[in-house]
Amino acid sequence: MKKLYLTKYLQSQFGKLRDQPIEAMIQAAGANELDDIDRTAIDHIAIAGLLAPLLNDQSLAAGLVAMDSAYTGKSIKGVVNACDSGGLAVIDCAAQIQAGMAHIGLAIGFEKMHPAEGRLDSEKVGGALGTAAHRDDLFPPFTFPHAFALIMDQYMKKHDWTEAQFAAIPPIFYDNASHNPLAHMHKTKAPVTAEAVLESYRLFSDPELPLKLFECSQISDGWARMLVCDDEGLKTLGIAKADCTELCGFGQATDSLSIQSRGDRLLEPVGAQRAFDRAMAMAGAKPADIAVQEVHDCFSVMAALSMEITKMAEVGKGLQFFLDGHAKVGGRCPVNTSGGLIAKGHPISATGIAMIGWIHSQLLGKVPAELQVADAKLGTTLNIGGPICSTVVTVQKPA
Image 1 (cartoon, helix red, strand yellow):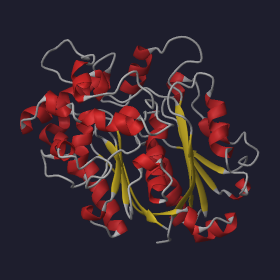
Image 2 (cartoon, one colour):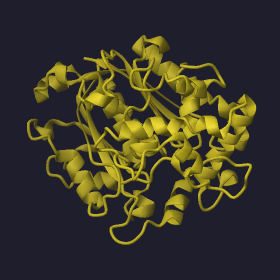
Image 3 (tube, helix red, strand yellow):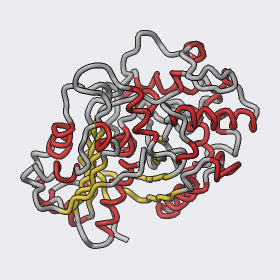
Image 4 (cartoon, one colour):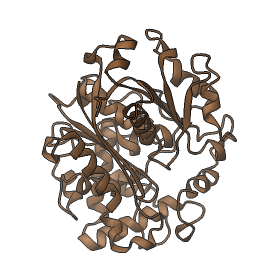
């Protein structure tokens, strides 16, 4: 296989970008801070914008990319697979290069969830997100919080954990976000402590269901982009390998959409595990080699499950990884130093690229000093779509 390189990462502020329509976001993602390269040399573009047809009345984002004269007439593909759409855009570019169809790929992910004027229509957003669930698993109007509350409840009961113990996770990510100026929750009214998590709004009146507001990812606007190149592509653009990371492994796998159909396997997702194992095998790496991770903490239970998928912890012990301090900057393997989806933000289709971009920046020593993991030689991302359904895993090392 050809060596693949990641370079020219850029993302917007994540949060409420009411004054930026999707056309402006896509234009910025494709052009900003690329004046030093010949953009017409880009062979292939993959763009992800999952909710654009439902929230922005636009189902052909590829055509918006082509409105930039540098990209008119190019191979441009829309890719969507729920919340791992951004990760798919990156590996779609990688696949095009490996197939000999391109030397330079551009991955773009964007999401516009807040209206230009007025208040956020949370029920409309909840309904749109619910289209990524099986009809038997729908809990209108907010399917995914309800579904993951059930998953969290199942995890707690099966492995004997409490809500108070789970409250240790969000403060780690909120603290990281306080040092990340692009994070949605870069500034909060007060520090988010475990006590604050427990006192935050309980989403469900059913006392049997856990999950509180501070344990949920943000509803965010934002965009992210990344160039994927082979050696010839780097030469064409005049980019030095010192400004790149190597995409040395990637994997994707999908489980059944229906939560009910997976039974007990829901807490040990086969597809996510297969994607991780494939990516690590491609990279020739072991879990012990991982120095830093970005994982898909759409809800806090997924942070715990992710530690089990990535073999940082045994089944049922993922939460302990956080309780023992291993996930903090300076810990055994820092997790979501960006702030994660819970605090950095979750503009659905930008998320996967932003996760990859943050690891890229970590390995190049370009994140804020308070968040920088020293001497990191290998980093991974675990980007999950739907109810632990579709998963993209990437592995990077310095080029």
